[in-house]
Length: 333
Image (cartoon, rainbow, N blue to C red):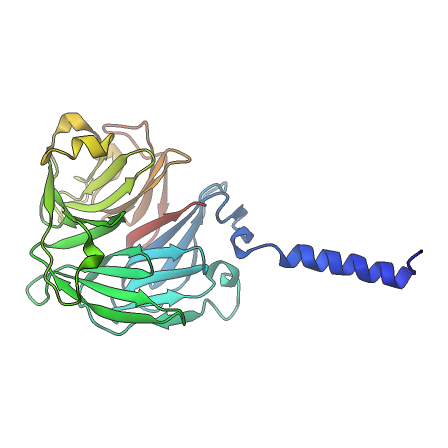
């Protein structure tokens, strides 16, 4: 039986519509790239009130931005399942969830806020995610407490406060490795490991299971571990008052060398020196697919990009200005 022209046209239009609706949000273009395929870097700022988004394979590289909830922000995390960004908003001391970010970047009405937590911490820094739980590292000073603050992402996309965990160390960068939470010990040359962190009840004081000292670091801030390559990358801000004494430590075979309580200079490669532009590198991200390191340097207010085979006093492969840069999160499908 032959189809009439109108019926055939209707079938073709339906097929085209289905083809378009079957594409998922992760294939939306950003600056000529595609999130998930090319890799995307998300950036926080603690001065500009902007969130940055960088498609890693665009040429030339260019940071796109949208307005944040507050002017001062730190830890950031991207949830691919929802296409949403979670960010530590230090202006109001909350965790903010931005909805469907990639699709709404070019929306004249801006990016919508899906939800926002209660105001609980007072000096939030790093942000870590595991199993619908968000953990904020609160760095203690004269007026605040060293503690982790836990939030649960519920089915209705609410960010519900679970409770806090006081601890005995200063905090900054944090990341989950399986069930263990790794944390920078601020104002020191060490990192701390909290095994089975989420097994603690709300209000429990938590003490590190063990410490790892990194010989040669003055004051570590950022950390990133990649389990496939077994690489740990740490940043050293040196003297916070200096804008030229920062460094990056790249530790290969981390699992084996971390069995000791001290990691020596023989166990890592270091990038530091005047040519590196590293002043106060406060956070770091590692792209295993492209063998690149992305560094948030607060002193120079630059995103600095290094290749993994670099070492010593070398200039970054690329650098991009981002005022107030404070935290990074790299997503690659």
